Each structure stands twice: as structure tokens, then as C-alpha cells.
Length: 393
Image 1 (cartoon, rainbow, N blue to C red):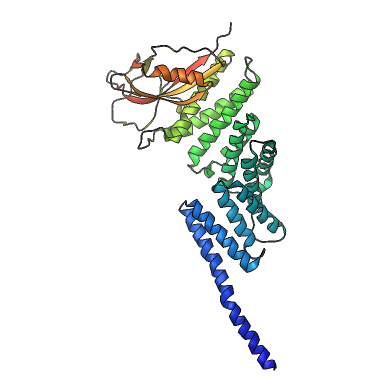
Image 2: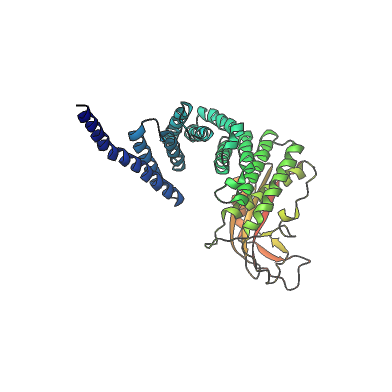
């Protein structure tokens, strides 16, 4: 009888082995499909395969095995898919299992995903402030060193963007400062990531000052800091602004460079009103000598660009709503100085001022400024900054 029972036991194990092997194969099959879809940027397929891998792990191991790690993988891809409720649920499950002893769970990342999902879900409500404070705390905690650059950059950018929408300028400033400290995590490249973060950090500083000190002097320390941030942004973005999209539409880098230039204009207008010293810009952060910046590809073997004087007729008609305003207008200038097309690339201040610039810019003409080379060319694609500042009596 002992021999018979032993044989039955072996038979039972043999019957169970194919099922366990099938479950193991299912987990790996779906996990590998998840990884492949992520590499291809196919987020819906990645989410579906991550869910399937987690389900197979649960069927095999319950809350054990790789279930906790696979739950975190699902949280990551759900966040990428902007399925914030599912992302928060999956990340919190991974956290619970990790704190209960499951191995391999990056708990700081799980906390970060949960906080980012909460901010996305609750951003417009009273809970949004709490979610923002939680996310800010996580990004400044020592455990943030365990997070990679991409996780930190995206979380800092989200926090900064939330600050702008809520007019919480200090949180916007903090978020973009965090992103700017890890620019290699930008999906669009390190130089763009740094430039974009520095522009937005400066905008938060300037806007907070203008809000708090309307018709009053801007803080000298804040003005100096914002000016330095914009100088750094313009320096790193200018080479990227020379690259043109096949459609000839403004690229993200060109738009970011335009924002750096236009906020320079607004800040310097405010400093002039307050009769404060305007810091010198680094040479690389300046446009050409006439204050215009040529963007898009430039043939260095062609004729040099003329120093341009814009004949701004008709003049602007603007009743001030702000103390300062500035617009970066993108002009395509023809060989005879005609404005072939124009576009508002960025603005600082009221939309009304930008609309007024757009209304008349197509009628402007360009002419060579004194000191231009005799064989220079007028034809160019340039950014011009148009400023408004309130005169104090």
C-alpha cells in the first residue's frame, strides 16, 4: 500500500507540473509583450499586456511571487495612458505588498506614481493642494535619489504645470526648479528639458512679483534670479531654434526660445519702469545686434543678414490692462522687406496686446538699418519682441 500511495503522489505532481509551467510561461509571455510594446511606444498594448501578466501572477502566486512588481509595472503604464484612477490603485497595491515584505518593489517610485495620479485626479479640487504638497515632499525627500531622471523630470513638470493652473506661483517655481535639476529626464532631450524648465521657473518668479507688487517696484533679488534663468534658457535653446520642422511650423524648441525672449522683454520693461539696472545678457542669449533673432536653418555661405529696422505702420492701438506686456512675433520677411507671414510665437501679459500686434504686423515692412553690410540680405525668418510699458507720471 505504501508503494501504491507513493506512486499516486508522483502521479499527482506530474499532473500539476504542466499547469504550473503554463502559468509561469503566461507571466513571462505577457511581461515580454509588455516590454516590447513599451519600447515601441504602444501604450494601449503595453497596458493590456501588463494587466495580463499581473493576472497570470495572481493566478499562480496570489499576492506573492512577482505580483507586487507587476502591479507597479501596471501602475506605470496606466499613468502613461492617463488612466489615473487605475494607476493610483495599482501603485497603492504595490506599496502595500512591498511594505508587507514583497521583494523588488521600488517604494519611492510607487509613492511617486500614487501622488502624481492623485494630483491629476484631484488637481482642481481642495484635495489638489494636499496632493501637490505630497508630491513636492516626495521629490524633496532623500529617497528621491532612488528615482531616475525621467521620473523626477515628469513629476516636477506636472507639479509646476499644476502651480500655473492654480496661480500658485511658489509651487510652480518649485516644480520647475526640480525638473530643471534633472533635465536628462525630458522626453524631448536634455537641452530642451533644461531650457523649458528654466523658462517656466523664471515665468513663475516674474508673475508672482507682478501679482504681489502691482504698480510697485519688483524685488531686486527676484528680478536678478529670473533674468539669470532666462539667460540660461535662451543660451541652451537658441541652437535648437535653428532646426526647422518639415512643415515649417514653429517647433517646440522655437516656441520655448520665443518665450525666453518675450519674458526677457517683459522683465526688462518692468525694470525700466522701476528705474532699476537691467543686467547684461550673455552674448549667446542675445539675438542679433538689431534685437531680432533669426531662427530656422541659416546658410552661412549666403549673404549676411541685414541689421533690420521694422517700419511699424500702422501703429498699435492698445489701452493698457497691465503695467507691462510683451509679444514675440515671428516674421517671415521677403527679399524686398515685405512681411510674407507673421505669427504670435509667445506673449507675456494680456491677450489683448497680442491680438493688437497680430492685427497690424502683417502690414509692417523691413528695411536695412544703418551700419548694415552693402550686400546684406533682408530675406529672413526672425523673432521680434514688441514691448508695452506703462509710463508713470
